[in-house]
Image 1 (cartoon, rainbow over the protein chains, first blue to last red):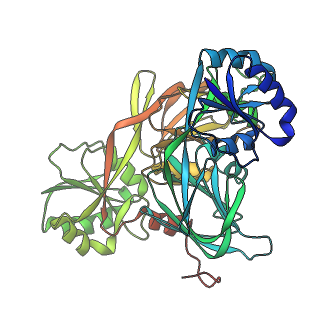
Image 2: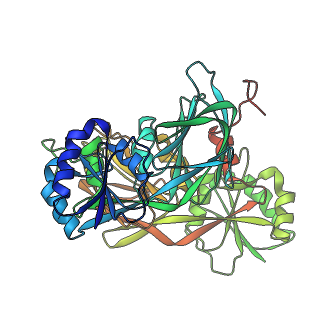
Image 3: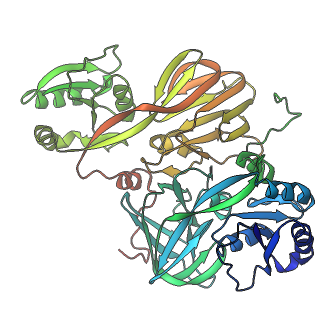
Length: 263
Length: 263
């Protein structure tokens, strides 16, 4: 079994620990800084991504195979193992004892190019720019927003930027997009939840930044967004449970004891 | 074609106008106050519901056939024709020139009985009661809420009580429930969006009111909620469009001119 390792530059020490543990048992096809321009071939069974959620996102966009996040400290939304769980990780690799956590992603088209986003596609003005007029068009109707920006998010991204803007938490297997405005006028702060079968056109009255999963891509006045036919696969320990991760990371829906609560 | 008419008691005058217009062309099988305990047989092709959204909701729960809402003043979310559009209504009935707006509904089980809800199933404490511990259990995980109540809403209900509590707007054809807490402790105010394929158990540490589409049903400590296999059908004019209705009724996503907006 060939395994690849990507790591975030400043996680080099942690990555070396992972590398030396893994290479005792498995063929390590590459051990690369995730910021490098390197795209592995298709013979890799799994890529370990050592770093935070950003590193896992970047890794997922470089590879076709499943990705497994390893992190020092606390687990991220995308990570599955902590740095101090390497024995367990190697045993699970040996027995391929994982939950495959499949997530659907966005396909974004702008001016003839197309891109992918796992969390969200954001259209947002520059600081010096005036408030923007957005038009969101789809089969289900047309909506207008006068706002600093718009966030189109997957269920996976609902716990990221959209959450910070007041959006709901969506379970990963919900078949819907969420559109959440950034600083809208006229109190239209609510998110709009749209079936994932929709094809959405968003236009702006002047060029704005297109930001995909946190990376600025270009300036544009028009994008088309739809569900991508391809999934991403995260490997998780068998014990992984999305609701536990939401409760631990953001405290939502968590049992608070010592409060008269039934336990 | 046999047509039935339900009306809200204080819409009697409006209902009489509808009745006398319709009976010239069609067989009116009944003309009844919607608060009466009357359930029509299956030979009716359509029931006209004269009143507001509450009347349409009550009508939908009494009949199997499509329902068409007629309203004086402004259109409601569930109505399709205004009282001053009766000529159009009769012509559309003659040619059966409607959009069938199918909506999925909730099936709620509690202590051996089952019920339906079109908008929402609400568990809520009495005013004199202390804050309640709720547990929401499903295949996707378990969530805890320490709150005055919980609202389980369909997409149709997302523009009703859930919206007033801060929830998102869901397009009618989204296959997801929304759970929104009422006055939750610990800032857990966000809605949770759950696939409509889920079967949800909600339990409370003491009996609370079960309120379905605004009607108090019983006190209970436990309910089971899932998508009902049966749809409801609202007849709408061919020009009906959900996004237009959202924009007109709550102003969300509306084009505001004279604001530098592109028109």
